[in-house]
Length: 483
Ligand SMILES: Nc1ncnc2c1ncn2[C@@H]1O[C@H](COP(=O)(O)OP(=O)(O)OP(=O)(O)O)[C@@H](O)[C@H]1O
Ligand SMILES: [Mg+2]
Image (tube, rainbow, N blue to C red; front, side, top):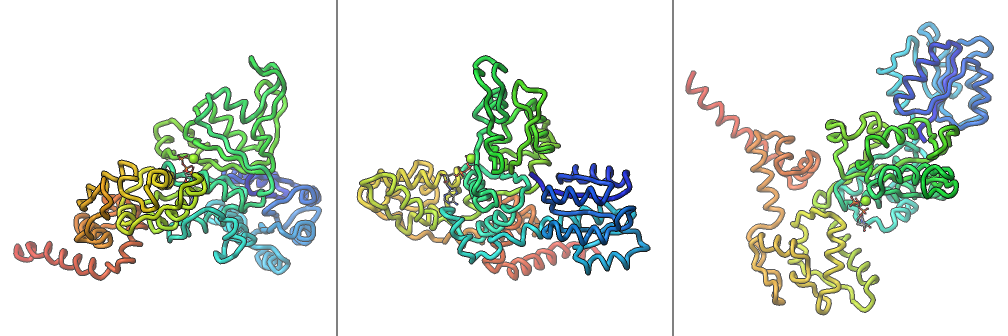
């Protein structure tokens, strides 16, 4: 389920030390103290990286390198060597090793960063998503709508990690599209032809969840009338989405941890035989797991196992530049779903309100709003009254002249445009926080990146620098008089 590393070193201690360290990093590790045996392992299993010693009895590292490259050209080889043999190590590079590291090994400073960069660049190579214009990618993104700045950033990341087998943790508010992104991760992966199975961990009590996931043997509990495979088995070779992972109980968490660590589990009622599977795990939650770890509701070790690649799905209001595309998409979707109801239209005034509305329910809320408007609208023009009350209230709070029961358009153009309001808020919050972007972003309820993006977009850098300078002069003034 994770990246695989093969270690060949004739020193037992090095093997066991590396085994322990790399397992903790989430790698699947196999070790061998005999080069011949290492080659045999390479014939049986695909590895991402072979980490081999240079000087070994039986066969030296260079020979092993050459033979390993012929057996498994896609496996990257890293040579381990003493300082004295750096020249030979360079020879190894010529022969196709990806890099070398010197002994004594610097695990933290050298080995871990090297491995992670190899694994990452591997994900880069053969995935179609790097080039966003790639038609295969566009096609695979299918009905995932939105090509604004933040969404493209997300999609790039999705395509990048889709091809590796590392666990992904999808976090984001309710309705932001976590489930949809999990589908993309599967579709864009090498596993796309294999099963994609979703489990809602919050929907079942613990004992049922266990037998659902792991299966059970006949008679293991009342109602277990026959042997049954669980969803892990069903997902073998494919992807398993553990949705609402934040809801699993503390007693069930260790069992899940074990599958993630060793790729094996026991069916309920069968303590003897472990079942081995090859499943890529995606977990999703709208809970803040870091907080849950802190409060003791979620195991830290499990959190780190799941969170190898974190993907944060931004709320809709932080990618509001997607709104119009989404609107169009949901308008067409609603008209298809409700036969006899035509595609509706939203006036510019209403779109302006929708652009400013905070969308606490995110994309799902937008989809629902469009669906209800489609059904309620008289004719094709959507009136404010056709939209959910929360949006109507919001529109009124904007202080615009809103005719909720008549067909009047949504009032006069506001004195300030949305952009102007935003710019004013940014400037005010920056002044208030002494031009600290992090605190300013907190104050505005956006991420620091979003704030910087907006500052850039509205070209506020100069204005802010000027204000900051003026402020500093002002605050220095009393000191000067005191002197
Ligand atoms: N980018 C998108 N393009 C089109 N539809 C989307 C997009 N993102 C989400 N949706 C739609 O919005 C709805 C909510 O998405 P989804 O179920 O994936 O959200 P979620 O984050 O899993 O929500 P929850 O936390 O409530 O489980 C779904 O109907 C989904 O099809
Ligand atoms: Mg969901």
